[in-house]
Image 1 (spheres, rainbow, N blue to C red):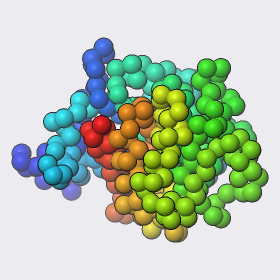
Image 2 (image 1 turned 90 degrees about the vertical axis):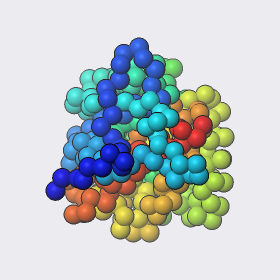
Image 3 (image 1 turned 30 degrees about the horizontal axis):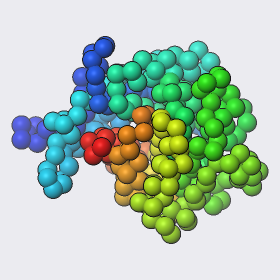
Image 4 (image 1 turned 60 degrees about the vertical axis):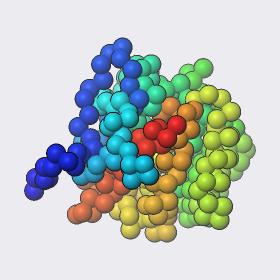
Length: 299
């Protein structure tokens, strides 16, 4: 069913391609990784699904004052990186992010499984990392369960992230192993569990995360939607009942994106082909894009 048209109700999305050499506030880039996922996924279909879901929303904040993000931000969409899996694909994705970062204040990568975090953070020149995730992603090997470890150990010299500048928000009980918890502790990663997020509140944990990860100058934000309660994110293969509420995720994303040291972000682990009939997971991912833009506008 086609969406209605109203000239007084402009829709989000459908942003133009970036103009080389021209400054932009935010640029979207699809990075449809999926081949190394530890669980079967159709995440390669998700960037297109998020773009379609964006058109269901306006780009207007109620304030006060009322603010249309399209009026205050220069937003572009750079399309997708072709076949970003494998060594050549990783380098292709990292180089595309590197190119876009020269002219944009914020690059927003639409995944894809969580393996996209590795090339996107590298391409953005990140020296700090904040993850919103139920999982550590510190596994050995190459998969959607290993991007944080790879940024610490596998990235080329000059592109590795000091684990003491990594903050992991929303790490959940019954979703991790003791061995990877010990690895995080041994490396000096700041872990703020789901229980601690709820006990302390969004504003408090966001402030700490930015202080720790922002000890350098450039932070990458990894938004793994499987941190959210499975009732709100059935399209995430590893989401569990009792995760973050959708509103908690949105508030956290906007609070973090308001800091100018956040130069890149990714939205990961949504499988558009496994979503509920109402598309709730993809729609939440689209709202995370808008929350990133809202945070950018608040800087």
